[in-house]
Image 1 (tube, chains in turn orange, yellow, brown, blue):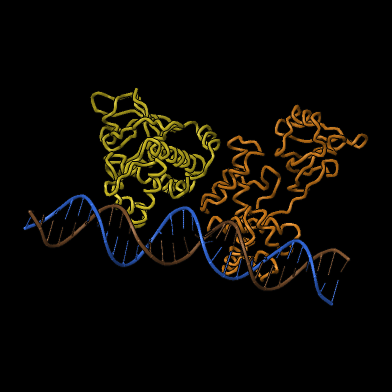
Image 2 (image 1 turned 90 degrees about the vertical axis):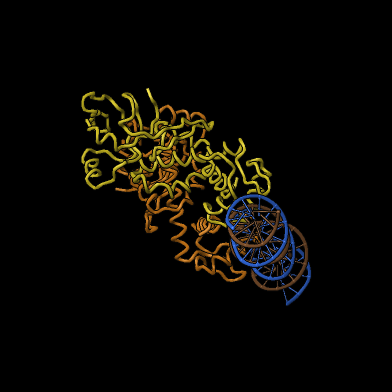
Amino acid sequence: MTLSEEDYIKSIYHLSEFNSKSVATNAIAEQMKTKPSSVTDMVKKLSEKSLVNYKKYQGVSLSEKGRLVALSIIRKHRLWEVFLVDKLNFSWDEVHVVAEQLEHIKSDALIDKLDAHLGYPKVDPHGDPIPNKDGVFTKSVKKLISELPVGSQGVCVGVNDSSAAFLKFLDKNKIALGDTFKILEREEFDGSVTISTRSGSINISKQIATNLFLEIVDEE
Amino acid sequence: MTLSEEDYIKSIYHLSEFNSKSVATNAIAEQMKTKPSSVTDMVKKLSEKSLVNYKKYQGVSLSEKGRLVALSIIRKHRLWEVFLVDKLNFSWDEVHVVAEQLEHIKSDALIDKLDAHLGYPKVDPHGDPIPNKDGVFTKSVKKLISELPVGSQGVCVGVNDSSAAFLKFLDKNKIALGDTFKILEREEFDGSVTISTRSGSINISKQIATNLFLEIVDEE
DNA sequence: ATATAATTTTAGACAAACCTAAAAAATTGT
DNA sequence: ACAATTTTTTAGGTTTGTCTAAAATTATAT
């Protein structure tokens, strides 16, 4: 597979990730920053390799073979993101561009050993799930801490309230996007929640809990 | 710089590393596994970019600019090799192919952080020196332990005697290619040498010392 | 010294991945 | 329903890096 083919496959995967229908030529062109005519050329090529289902004027979708290729690229991308953040101290918003390059490195042994080195992570620093070798991944759900049961564990992936005051609070309490938290206890009378962080456990008010999104890994 | 341009630059660097003269078109073609005519095309292109000095039929040599490009690629290659061996537990003879891909990843921040993560290594797992950001590197010398003064430090990069018995001895004493040793003491009357290893320090006979090559980093 | 051999360059072609401009098909609005 | 608009494809061209075959240059050997 060429680098360009891999990028198209990945693009088609992401465009059909949620609506699951066939993807329009123009949509691919826009995402890939190329012209629709170039997309048509490539889609024909991918179709000949049985990586996509394609009929003229009818849009395109990934074949099962293509879907597995996409997931293997996404697996590599997300493992590299974990590496960059956990081992090289990149911040979670810097890693995407570099991972876009690293995802194309071809070596099964490399990815296996990287996975082991990182401790077999289940999600990347943005909270997106990492498929296993066979393309299987647990579809994670993004929920507010206030909506989750005690015992839930997940990666902090977003905020509702992005005011300076709130972000300052998070900083002060060493809460950052990409951190993994576990919900230890919930006080009935005020809705405050105790969560475990890397630096111990802290209690957050209900207001805070309704402003922090976790990407759930395991729900106990 | 394209991937192909980088590969040519690196190839020319390695071909002129020792004889320092200009490099023949055929030699490049052989190393790059392409045809001489392709080399001529590329060399013209590199010449227009002032990366090489080139006159028709007279061979080619790197310009100062080209030399720095080569050294930056070599820096990346060797840092990745250290990563693969030290962090991912690849054996020293498996890493070259993967590093050939990784060396083309473009991100200064990545290389800086990787360098720091690895503890600013001076040599790769084969004992070859790693240039710094500015292309400066200490030209290391390969010598037998028996020829080195007390205080020398280096990476074990080869053996004189490759008999099964000798390799078995090395294995038993936890000496492997790629390990860093320091010469702590030399007994005058029998020429035996005490060296520090990762698992402590051991004493080796003069015979052993005349069979192990170290690539010297710092000579005290 | 010069014929022969080896090396290097040129000329022209090809595949991959892109482009523009124009034609074909599908969609939309009334 | 069908004209106008949008989307998609086709046709033909460009660039990068490769190739083959032939021509030009340099090296070698007697």
